[in-house]
Image (cartoon, rainbow, N blue to C red; front, side, top):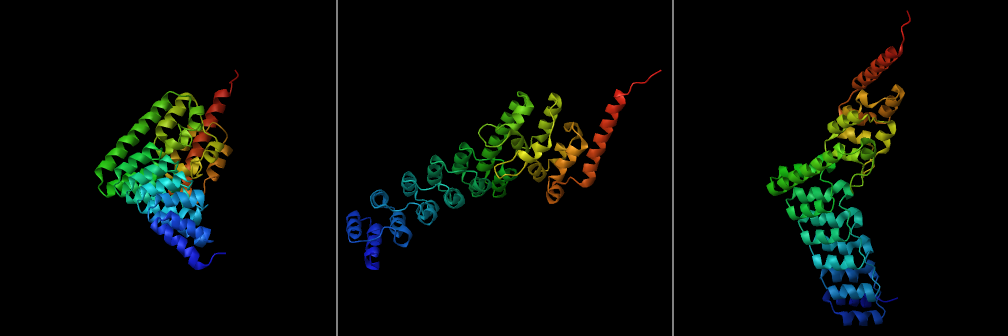
Length: 322
């Protein structure tokens, strides 16, 4: 085991970018993993690219030490070249719950954010927090890059646009408004040109969510309900409980959060028994139902509507004998 002085000599060489001195320290027994690969973090902090490559490729330094601290620090401080090299060497772009992308988006380091996205950083972590941070801080270039990499502009009720508006970042607000409108129009076009049962329940585009979930997020539930009635489609208990967004919120819960629950409990969408509708209602937590604005009295009205329809259907089947 190397003594502290030898290990510190390696760290000193890393800070200075002196590869020959680093080799000498390692030959003398310096541990490249000393203090959680401190030498690598020091080289990254000083932006010595050659040293970073040497420590990882030749000396076996762990690029993931301390939850990819070297990459996270580079992202936080806008060191794009360092971040790119660490990513090339296998650093995790989503380390610590997406911290590199969220930090670079918050601080406006577009080159870092684009590098992370090019290495498949997930823009959806924390319900697309990177997008909200970029919008809130007025970083249009990063907002555009995130949108081009399938960030969800409608996450958290489209709060990215609201945050940009609150800070009066007009270019960001305008870009998001145009892009969100384009996505809505594209969705509604597809809705009108597809059989709803398959279309609504299948994965929409490459969003990772069903078209029904996207409809809720894009505030297109009224159009979906109208289209379902046109085509004779209907809802089931499993639709409300099994169709989920990326955060694993069921359709019923998501609709409640977005104020669209009453639209899904339109009696005309439920051709089954009252027990089916009751089961769907019961699967939505009471607190969530309350948040939606749909009350028990409203649901009782749905049941009454279903009862009335059942009575009419039975009356129509009765044959009067003379």
